[in-house]
Amino acid sequence: MTIPESRPAAADPTLEALVAEAVALRRSGRLDASKQLFEQAIALDATHPGVLTSYAALLLETGDTQGAIRLGREAVLADPGRMSAHHVLGQSLCRAGHLAEGIRTLRHAVALREDAFEVHVHLGNALIEVHDLAEAERHLNRARELAPQVAAIHVGLGNLYRSQQRPGAALGAYRRAIELDAGVSQAYNNLGNLLSEVGDAEGAVSAFRRALALAPDRASTWSNFLLALNRSDRVGTAELAAEHRAFGLHFGERILPLEPVALRPPTGRRLKVGYVSSDFVSHAVVLFAEPLLAHHDRQRFDIYCFHASKSSDETTERIRALSEHFVPIAGLPDEDVARRIRAEAIDILVDLNGHTSQNRLLLFLLKPAPIQVTWLGYLGTTGISTVDYRLTDAQADPPGLTEALHTESLWRLPDSLFCYQPYDFAPEVGALPAQRNGHVTFACLNNPAKVSWTIGELWGRILAQLPGSRLLLMSSSLVERTEALGRLLAGHGVATERVEHVPKQSTADYLALYNRADIALDTWPYAGGATTCDALWMGVPVVTLAGERSFSRSGASVLFSAGLPELIAEEPDGYVDRALALARDVPRLAALRATLRQRLRASPLTDGARFARSVETAYTAMAAAAFEKQPRER
Image (cartoon, rainbow, N blue to C red; front, side, top):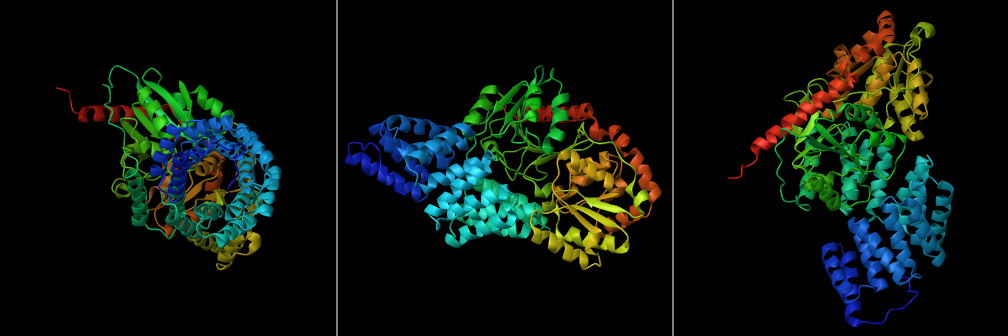
């Protein structure tokens, strides 16, 4: 839609020609060439509101939100009545995490031009982020009234329905967007995210492939795709490794590392370690990261936390207190963050996200630190050659099994890659349910997105051989998915009434559910980490099926560290046999129930000081090796 200027600028044929060509180049995807022409236009007239607005839109598209905000403010100052200037500024502010100001700016744009459907869409999306869903729905419905055939509006409505826990409506909206315009990559991406969330890994992979075919330079779609691949039981390890390497090669050709920076002599000084994460909020990652941060030796290590999320909460404040330097980076371009890292002379930069939401993996392609490591948030390779190491252990990545799947060198910690910090509000362990119920209750309280048909088949076999047993599951938000799993179990003779699906719970209520369970069954090929630890803390033993990839072996890592290697199966029949043997031995279940929490307290799995020393030993050795390899000045 072309929006007329509120204050027409004096016509300058040269300037108008430059802007017209720059806009055409942007629309054709030639963003670098478009930027060069906008720079020429700015040189001719640095206060022209149309040039400033259009250039800001380009910078927003390329990810330079700070540049877009700067130019957007200048455009508003040059022409306060220009709706499009307020529009691009509002979008940029929201993208940078300044949601309150961004929403105010977008509201002002709507007031200037109520029939601009694009503004209603962006305002609706911003209101979803601040959980004002009723107001978001009003603006998105108004956008649909104004332009019912525009695909982006239906993408926005899909996002709204997803936030309202209406997955069926969200699927319909995304599919309607695709019907209207099969060239909108974000519709496929968001459809893939939703399908992945409800457990349809194959459908998600297919949607992401289509999204990438349309927009191959969208790094977030790549990460969504790679995460979905790890949830699929139809993807082999060779394909998994190849797709991760394809990500690294694709962006490695487009993002060149900075000039190498020499590592200063590591002895006789504190090593500077920077952790980059979007999960320094109430998130399972913090259960494992916080013990390390709390026990770092501050005489030997100077700790930085780079907070990549727009959100903050009480957990964020705890992390802030555990780091000498807490640096918010949400909305900042990778180049600016890299310059800050270089200015601080960070020795070791540690990614805690991998290919999870809001990751900053492209920052690591710039190689701002001499040593770069990935750990914890993603139990697989980043696919990026500039990440030197992945912290793991010998159970998650047995020597000789998974090296070929990684672009990083595997650095195995002596105990586990996990150090668990139990919730201080966890309820006491209750009595063994089997003793009062007269039957065994299995449970899988993992994210239903991790429940593959392969593991469902194994659950069916287990329940079929224990006719009185029950199964407790977290329910998928999509009824069709729950019904499909029910049909799969019914194929093994498991009646519907033997399977209970419970909705998503608060953390305290989720933990209390374990007092209804005798045995936890792990998922596959995407095994549990935090949920496995939670179950053990609540006195519930976990049976896991390890496999040939790191993601399928996280349960094995936890159980081995907790002193329960006998609950680790290396093949499907072993998984079934271990679950049945445990279920038929009620005295053993009772003994485990009474002792598991104390066993965890005494194990390396909850020893934060021990874990911190092992990680610090790794960092020191990495630094020594890197310094030794450096060319010496003559």
